[in-house]
Amino acid sequence: MNATINYAELVYALRPEIALTLGLLLALGYDMAFGRRMSDCARRGVAVLIGIVTLASAVFQTLHTNVPPVGHAAYWFHGAFVYDTLAHGVRLGVFGLSALTLLLIAGSIPHSALRTPHFKHPAEYVAIQLLATMGFSLMAVSNNLLIAFLGFELASLSLYVMAGFDKTSRASAEASLKYFLFGGMAAAFMLFGFSLIYGMTGTIVLPEIARSLAVQGPSPLLLVALVMVLVGFGYKAAAAPFHQWAPDVYQGAPAPAAALIASASKLAGFAFFARLLFSGLGTVSGDAINFGGPAGWIMVVIIISAASMLLGNIAALAQTNARRLIAYSAIAHAGIMLLGVIAVRAEGAGPLFYYALTYGIATIGVFSVFAAIERTAPCQRISDLAGLWKRSPFLALVLFVCVLSLAGIPPLAGFFGKFYLFAAALYLNGLMSPAGWLAFLAIAMSAVGLYYYLIILKAALVTNATAGASAATEKIRVPLSTVIALATSAALTIALGIWPDVVLGLFK
Image 1 (cartoon, rainbow, N blue to C red):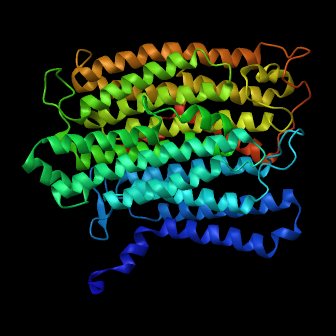
Image 2 (image 1 turned 60 degrees about the horizontal axis):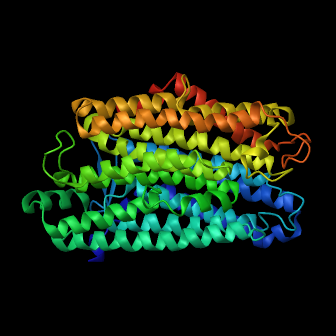
Image 3 (image 1 turned 180 degrees about the horizontal axis):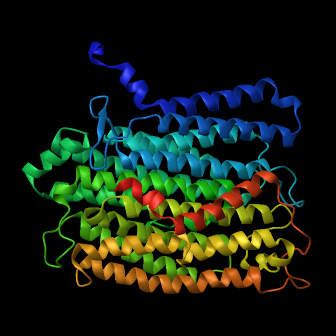
């Protein structure tokens, strides 16, 4: 049996993951050998530098992997791994997003009211984040239910720890516990659904599952399996009505951890979800064109998408906490990404990838601003942003660009993300189809989203910090590493809006 295993092929398929493994071991080893004798600032800097170099090495390995032409794929290790344009783009995307969030911890200094640093053990944090990134990368190339589940859980277990990494904060501990409980429930649902699919088809490889289901056709057991998988993924993606963990985690987690949860995890998760539904379960998708068409998972996804957009946008209107508002907006954006999953049938994965990537970049920019403000004062309530334009014009400018991108204002990347995604959904069969109605709902909810995004900008750009307000009035000094993350997020948000074909051209 072992003689049939091509380990050279396995090493070739997992070169980025191997680079991440070596990097996290180096970060831990260096910290154990030399870090204890260094200052906290230098210790954080070295850990982050090792993490950035490791991610750069993973990017190098990814760029030197042969990418098949668009519409084709390479299969490795008995079909367990697939490599195509989507896998290539997602790998590069999650490595870049992870690097941006790593930059935030180098200058992370808590408010003076706290007794100990957020990141007292920076090497451990960097190692855990590299493990999470490894999970995202595995999800990108998974062509096998078992590999995908391992990727999901490697990323999830790492994110649970990262959410509770601030030991000085009860909110961080609560966020980690809630995230763990809901994530464990999601894993159980997803694994049970996968096991049912395996029981019906006798395989865990996605194309073989599709061929088997095409012969068998829909069945009550398959319906149960689909429900389990959709519920499990709904929890992972914070889609309504499985979103309960998201507001608490976004509020309580350290800003770098919250930024990673909101960006890279969504990009990798939705990419695999689209692959699972179309490569593995495409033959039982049902009909998104006619309301009375054959039943399948596509109508369930439409319902979850509509619920996410309605609940996320309406609940965000009532928020006074800036992080919780971003969390509810993330639920609404998850609904739009589910619309993008449906639109894969019409235009491929390009619009979904572009939207998830640009959403992640803008969200990291917002959390980078929050992290910079927290160096001098708490940044939880929207009122904490008051007077930001006086305290730091640079932070106010970055917040302005990233929030308007999330709102979908041209010529920023968020506008074109929504435009291409809505156009792809309408291309299925026009406005009078279920997907068309969902696109119309998304357009209407985007107008609602603009209102609460403007509330954030009003506080930061118009409102003055008054005596007795929680917002501090002293100037904010932003460390170089955070400046790089902020400038990169804002620049990419603008550049990808002006030149969207830089990303979309990969899928043509």
